Image 1 (cartoon, one colour):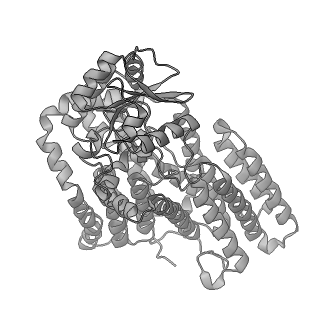
Image 2 (spheres, helix red, strand yellow; image 1 turned 45 degrees about the vertical axis):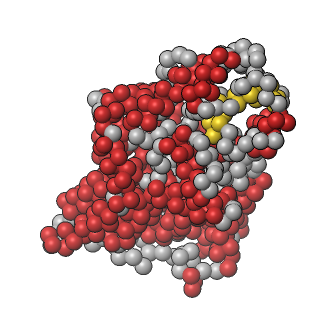
Image 3 (cartoon, one colour; image 1 turned 180 degrees about the vertical axis):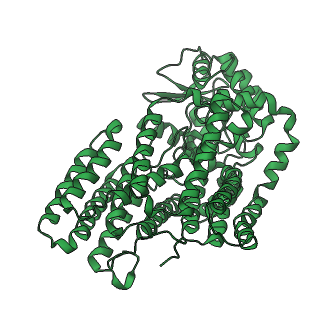
Length: 576
């Protein structure tokens, strides 16, 4: 049992606590395992999706130098995440990167679920029930903040690893293990530079708030020793990122014009809160309100360490809101303080899971209350999940109605975990995108043709929103919208390529796509001369440019491929 904060009443786990292995029944173990496995499957084991279209490229090229050998982004710009590239390169060397990275993502989901187990055991007298409630909330509501922040994704990227490691580190801090907290957080920071920028100031705030609240507290020496264990590993985590920061410093002359490209044109959805839609804010307000009410209702459960964590998050997020919304400062926007918002959401889910446990009430009333909380959170995203929750409620209430009173709460927890595990497993196993959604048929046939009928070192001009082309077709391109370089001078080159390809000023992605739709033969030849391109892909649904003189060598119901130098036949290309 972890040490409690002095003077803080911490509930003792019941005999059937799911962490007390020697007292764990086979049924309880099976239920917890089913729920955690189902949770991991539901989150996803995808490969070649979303941000992986950008983050996998450098690592795959490192494993196979012939992969995208003539691609500007892959070979001439700095990789985003050095440690992640090593993992990607190793996974590629196994011949099954999709399996390796899918399993790693499942491991992240399982790690987060097991951390919820530990928190439920610490804060709740009935941890099985609380864990079930927390897992329901995380699984069905997800832990997505605003501005594109997240903890878990259906596919593995560095932010997932760093986020989950940060959650584990916070749990270590709660149970008075500052050494473990500092080391685990630093491991996450070594993978992702954004967490690196935020975690150090966050630890200092947590330490100051904890020290201020302790009366009497430990000696100054002991307190400084605790701080050193938080910050020393964090300082070491800077080492993998030193080359990037040195390159950034040497490229500072391009910083001012590049900021406009990066913040205002490429990624306002991350860095300009005034452009964000209202709905995520409403979702967030509902979740945090429920968490605040639950925390106040069980305030005696939480000690100095827990309160310091939440207050530190609030301070950073409030400061971030002030200096990205009311008084915008690009340096603060670049630090992306919104990255920590999902941690506050997760804290709200934990508080709700602890607070909905009844004290001397019939289990059926608890089931109705917990279902109402979940349905309230889901009110603005309602879909077929409501039916699953109602089924869960009915089964749990039915079991609770006849189960002996002294085992009523465990019965409810077992029922919830059984239904949750079964449903999430079903969604994970049968959902088409659980292991990576198939590309739309038209795109899939385009990619297959490019792989099979064009030289491996061919360079393509493509519509800027065809983001999966590099990874799926395995061919180099001149430019797309998704892959943005890190260094300012490269960001300006990214914009220059888009403006050359679109033949217009670019203010948003739609401008780049609209300009590409007017691509004609003269512009295609000019791009071929400048960027060594050989083929042009067009979207037949929207292309209006005149490509007369450029042989069409592939076509399906949506896409066509033209050889930029006229008269090149498919047979001639295949023979090269």
